[in-house]
Image 1: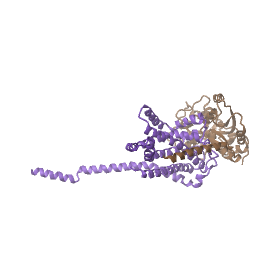
Image 2: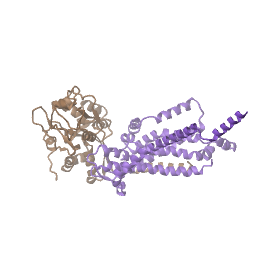
Image 3: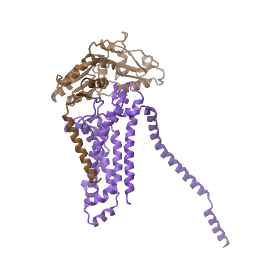
Image 4: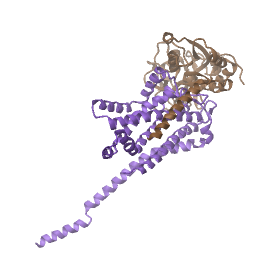
Length: 303
Length: 294
């Protein structure tokens, strides 16, 4: 009897005092949290190093003049305006095509289509399309848009190629965000007598818009930096004029970066870095605008 | 996406469409010029300058290599194709079968230079030696095989830098140095541009490569080339390319579809004028005719 109370007291004591096992657990806990923190920091490191290098080496060349003047003297001096403008043309036209198409397809797949062999094949095709290398898209664009449809090497052909390349990602991300809207929302809406389309427009889409924007953001960044698809279909080494329509060729920042860093001799060392900085700056700018928009829209969300 | 946004994008699309219509009505002529990486920088300089000659004509320049330019000529997607080699009989036949009639114009000459690292002690290389270095069954795999000791090259192995196989520079070097049936050695580093070759050789003590004279800079060495061992060698330069005394000088071509007419003829005539040829000379190539430049 006496023994058992003593044992009880002992165990109660050990419950509140720190045992060797507790200390060990705490140590491993700390070790892993530090380890994973280091991993996370390691991920940010390349970004910082890249940005830092670009700013240190090319920052001195960046000015308003650099952004808004033509390249001169064999593209070793002057600015990047035609390339900058060209990239804006290409990306906006590509998004104009791929975003409405992609969203429409995603709405069909997520809201209307039933799960049968046909939609399963479509889904499989979309996933595979997303994995096609950009150089293959480039050759497809060359064959289809430049030659078969006869658009020639033009902004239109290049943008359509980019649009096809970005379509799968837009579809997949839109479908995911549509499916993230709870099914109960739809049912509630149908029970009020709303049609399918009314439900999609008034309930599903407004609730999914932030997710859809995420997909579009990703695509803006990707299309801005893409070089291979536009090299064959619409971007030129040098153009002495600004594009005036979608059947003109254009210069583009990504190709311009490739050209000044590998093709043109006697380029001042800072120039390629400055072009890269403009390219990255443009992507970051577009991303932050979309992220701000997304945060605003998410703030409006009611769940 | 609400109704307004959809409507907005529709308006934007139709706006862009209208914009393109209006531009196709404008009088500006665009000449498509594509091909050789050797010529691309001089083609760019011509296009840049031609803006001041005729404002209504714009020259769109793209690179990609002689093979790219010639393929575009065969497919009829360019007005002028640049090439640092002549079109093969097979290619001309193919072009003709597609209704194209490629006409060749020589616009200048280039000395194809053999580049070495600055510390490389070699001054002279004969065709026979180049064959041993670059050729398929060549015996020179180490610098010591040529009796050289290259400072900074610890492994002694020769790093052979070549070009991708649709390059005109590649084709010309192969034919001129390795012979008609010759093949490049396996395991060469094939670069995708004339400038890439120079950049790599400049940084690699063990390396040897070839590229157009125009891509030379102060940090790299150009070998003196002798056609036969023992004979006096010739240094690559604009002068030796002009008088063809340099053994691997080559003509640079522009191809048009049929005899040039209208704006294309005007442009080619301007290229062959003193002004155009002086731009070529300034870029480090030899002019196709005697010119006096300031």
